[in-house]
Length: 312
Image: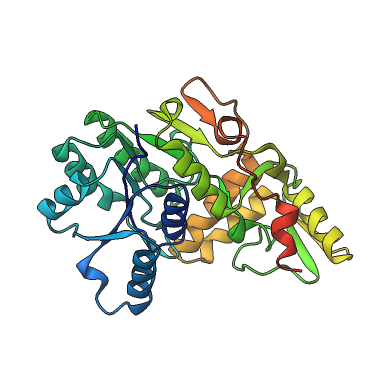
């Protein structure tokens, strides 16, 4: 059997553009959805045209035109959706219901990877408001997928390095702190930091792998499981300087939400679960799941000390 043909939906997004690149790099015929609603967004259009130059095929379809979606799906074997699920960018999780309907009608898809790529929503039933909406909506999409008997793989990619690494996991900035760093609780919860290109590489590895069929794949490579204090220490070693550390209790952290806008409140809730509960690592991977770096030991994933060097 040859490599599956792939359709990427949301290919101009933060993770989507990396998925397109990884799919092409691993030798898959790669289609990228071009939505007429792109309007005057020249940056997105130029990115799509650059994908075309690299060998991708642009397929025009709209979520407002069911038939066009069905036709786009029928051309491939695998659909990967990377539409944004974060509130500070755009939040389109439930739009995937239309994609599920198209996949169901097309009837030819061997694997669907919905837009997840963060915490495992199946483990977040206890999540705080308002941030729990992300997990509730992802579970709604999972329910639709499974009720339609669509073959699937769910990717749990944990923390994207660019958002959680160089800033030492500080809220509201992407840049490294210069003098002081806020430590969440004891700073000892184990967190998983992932280079975004590695997320894409592992994701594409799963699509033709029967071991990943109808399973959750956790991206949890051993050397990138770090506490916040270990992350800070790694940065301090790179810059040859100690930062002032200010501890924030769980109560203080949650109290900070009350004067924030909605998107920020969502972010605080997610940070709480990651850095105070340790929700990314406080469980064993069960029989209905696999860990990516064990499935694909040939992937030379980026360690966080390597990632942080870019910011020195």
